[in-house]
Image (cartoon, rainbow, N blue to C red; front, side, top):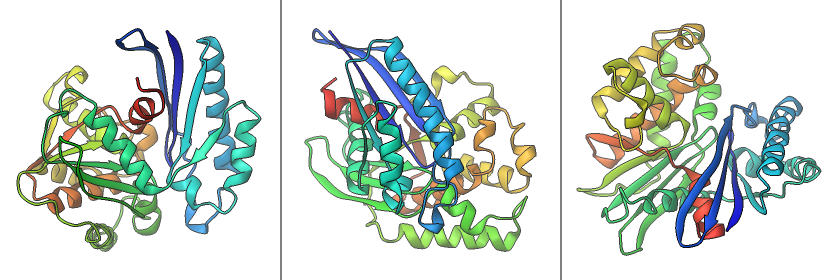
Length: 304
């Protein structure tokens, strides 16, 4: 048996997955944690801010502590949109190495592949064909369409994320009607770069935007969080959440049942992206997966 860790350093959140694997059994979960470190704050300037790096390095110090506590033998750590876009990424990588974590900045197509692998490796979607997976992150959105036998129709990483869209267009608190229109138009225009998948595709979303929106939906209908993984979130429900968030201040959003307060300022941007992606897919709903990139990284690097 071997103990391993997969760490996803996103633009908004650091996520760590620690498991014990081997012996022909499914991975045994040791720990799964997330930190809203917001590494991508202000990334429009092309550099990581010192305060954002410090928050993220503090999270990684906790990851290193968990790895020591659980006697992790190998760890795979990747950084996504904010890290690959930053001119000073090597400084951050060097500081993470001082904590004992070797961080790799991956490109967008690799990010898409790992998110897709996380979904395809799940028994719920293993044989679904065709399948469109989207990962709405803080700084980018990854889209990939593929088939159960392994062929891929299209995959792409777009410079469109919940943090990026919020900082560019949703500056009001609450945002104005004009800002909402600008954000929606920007999301739709950016998504047009991805080829429409065609009829019959199953749309699956991973990442914090998706799981938070699913959690809000379950809270509204009195459901259980045990039902979050695999939840079908209708296009109508997504539109309803956009109305809910757009009519509230950030402080008011923090009180919404099911929503992580740390995501209150960027959830509207993420919801707008999700709505436009559903339209692109020609779907009536999106399925929520709680297993994002870190799970794909686990399967890819360790064969778990």
